Image (cartoon, rainbow, N blue to C red; front, side, top):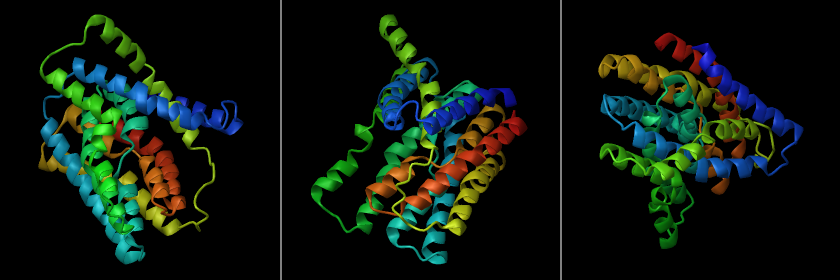
Length: 306
């Protein structure tokens, strides 16, 4: 099982070294990230879901993952509110940092490399993009007391403007209907999708290079430590207990849901924080620390559950 993770961490390391050396230039992380998000990842998801339709115990796995995500997110939100006395916007970012997983840049490569099937991570992407993201952005809007009609219209159409979301929906529908893409189109989509995993991992490594821009705020080690522990250890453990004991999942289904839950904090946490004027240092530190720790937790979880 360890061998399955070696290419993942190796390509992430390549991206980190390239970022540190500056060989790809400063804009590389943004350009490659946009390529992955807007082009390669949608192609990979569409190709996977049309060829491997979602089925089996997906409902129970989704329930286990969703409950664990909501519980841990609520704990992070409440800790920021009552333990650290943070305002609403920072409470929202704290909850997101504790529970919102990096399903794109790391989740898809991990699932394809370790499980050999990205269908469940596609469901996770659907949940996060169509349900959690509008809730998070809506709460951040409320925290800023910005109720402009145009802002809410953009908020409500977030899922429909996400290429990943659209690719997931199209793939789920086509896969359920057993409709395959025409061969010439399918081959082109598959070829493009093959670039998603290596590109995403290199982009992940690039993003881990410190670039500043943390809003000049003081570091918050106690809050970062709590968020990382909740995200990297408590959430996957809770998800395992729910999936195994409550919902009776075993085998590949159990492995998939626990691996998804053990993924580190999504980079969108930092993006949302900066967009709404919230301390970016906290979210950036949680992302970096949870990503580093996930190298161990993901490997251990996969080894124990395989």
